[in-house]
Image (cartoon, rainbow, N blue to C red; front, side, top):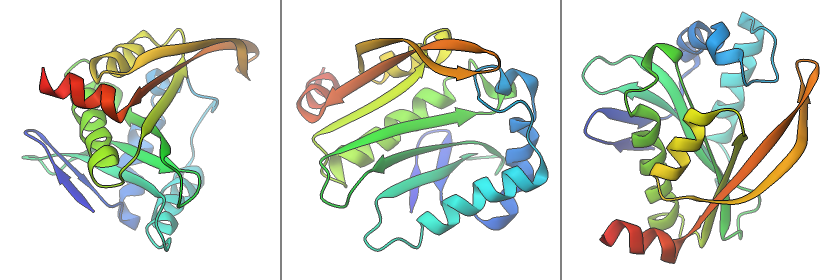
Length: 182
């Protein structure tokens, strides 16, 4: 798997990627909307190993790719699309970008690319995603790639000693095609 955009490469994870992932997942800015309090080497090695195992699926239903700056070769996050079953026509989309690279459009660029892959290559009918309601940057990314708010789930997630509202966004292939033609 290799997808390319103007500024990014979305590629398969390799075992050595854990170091770059740990660098951003240990950042307190990253952890703010995460269930994790801290991230250790063992945590992140297991996280990357999960993506390496997904690469071996037959048929493959989960595509979580490393996001790398095209001209620097630096891993700055990950982005993926995941079906529940091989015959599913729906999948979830998720992404994370290192805090030092927030606000530069990288999450939007990566998410738009994986969304296109989902509709064109995986032949999906619908893609959805969710985020913590207070994570306004993530909300903006989902809106920029054409997803629409479908539902707000009050007090849906519990972590860091409190309850968090979550938002569910979605887009159908027809909606996506209409937006890309504009």
